[in-house]
Length: 79
Image (cartoon, rainbow, N blue to C red):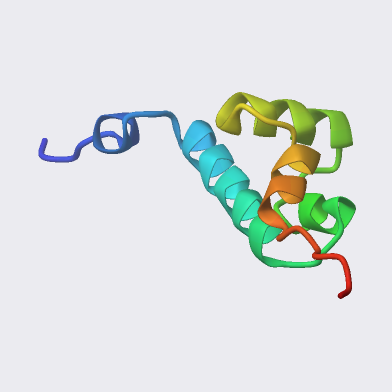
């Protein structure tokens, strides 16, 4: 049989692979859009805010809100 299993090709289970894709998309949206955290969480398929935050923190080492703050350019005071 010449078929190779998903885990052998991708190095993780199908569920872990999908989770990584979802979290990568959430990270990209946090860094490049003005969408709220709730909107992003819904777009990437998380119903639970705590589950999203926990998974995101495990993947990126920071909470979604921290990533959002660091991705936004700091506003300069008016001259």
